[in-house]
Image (cartoon, rainbow, N blue to C red; front, side):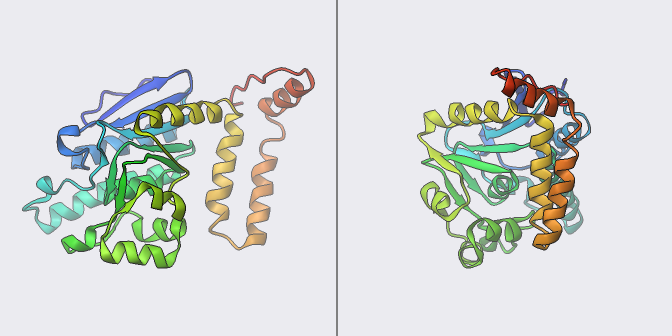
Length: 265
């Protein structure tokens, strides 16, 4: 697919099916300003409407020290209530569009992820980080609170007691703590992070894309249901795959002892 040139994001295909997205405001610690919110909203909406050949997304930040510092406080300085609320509505829409995106999104956290940066990590399907990265939701130190999923996604990832401590204190944790508590899937040496995550993304992109999408949908919505309803939802998701070309191809390739060629049909 052809994406526009964004002011705050860099997008590039890595191979045939993996899209690498880089938050590209290194001079401002990759902080989320209004334009980045609009750029993200446009990107996630386009991928929702027509993903084309994209089967997996990797999200990272420019530079070596900071993934995303959260909301751009320089831009927010002096904002009226109306301006603040308007900006936050843009942020809300882009976060929810990311969460609902049918494609898997993997965060490659190259450096510190604070505030909205950490909420971005938590909104991705899973995440890996450089061992030097630190994570925090410090909004309480600014007179506000997390407002784009932090109070919901963090306790679901690390448990209620730890989440309350992090959010109420505003204190950061290390990448190793984030891994041990369940907010990360793995920790890498900084130089190994992006190659490692891209390798995983290509593995996912090599699997049947309709299956990957149905799995994401089944887990996401099933986790919000009581278990017997979730079981039924899973079966419905499964049944949608039975008559796909990819299902026939997968079984045929297994019996022919070759690698399947999935087309997303």
